[in-house]
Length: 426
Image (tube, rainbow, N blue to C red; front, side):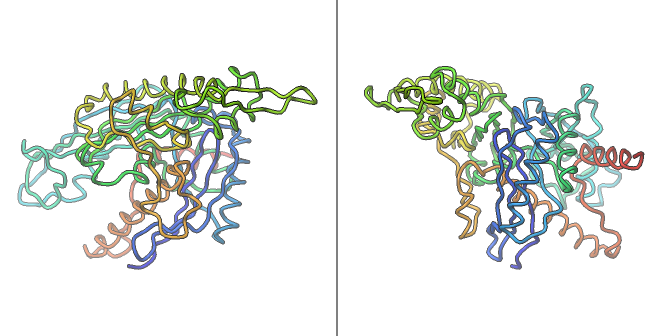
């Protein structure tokens, strides 16, 4: 197997912006060539709120990744999250002209394209159309219909929608940073690729990605995505609670949470005390670690209750054999998996993105980088699909000119044309 092309994942988060440069090596593992990270100032709850600050943060992260990898970065795969994300189920139907002809990739593509034409609420647009299962002439439960015969082709789809303005602002930030967007991917889908195994997706699993501004939820069962949700709470709310509860400044609250915080107050001794330096010559402040953990536990319980509501709302609560996999920066909090198990009664483990990584990629094995690694993996999957399409097009006798770049999403194409028109008018 030859090493693949180089792909860059750009995770525009609420607390950090990460750019990861990677490629697939000859053994099929992801080889990380370089990683850049910068603090995120212009993003709140997964949504861009200040374009100039976000652009600066993107440029800082990308410059660091370029320096470490020696790669000139021009095109990036970007993640999208935020509380505006919605998901729904829909069924598509296509009546084929002939039963003699086998069902081809073109039939599936046209069925997916039809889904992008669905009417959405004003200001909303479809981001992803994910096929769940196919039905051919009322024969259900078909995972891959290519090569089969049938007149009536149906499919159940999981459709993810988001606000046009939020996606447009992400696109604008990346463009102003001198980069081009290859693909826009929902962040929980990227994280799922990085930390979940195929066996877990088959058995039924919930991915919980606790970020700085949002908590992303993705539910898989029978290897198919069944439900997605974005909860507008994350690690930043916990930091705010610690800041208010202990009457200290935000940077101290973040350090306290990271070094001494725990999601279970009962795990700490009564007499454990942390001393914090006072401001400008004031006396030191002493804080009980148990009180600190009680503040953190209260907010974590609220976040987990929201997650549990989404699990129950999905209708798959009793079918999730593999339980919950928690990842993201919030997964680094001590005893977080025990708290989730206690509230939901489901097996829980912390997800690390190291299963798919080649040796020498230790820098990004923390749950903190699950989304960024997932974005690189998504980019590589898209490249593979495009290459397969190219080969099949050449095989059809159309030659290389017959190849067209694979459609990533109708939503993305519209955004691209909007910016092209905008540039032409200027």
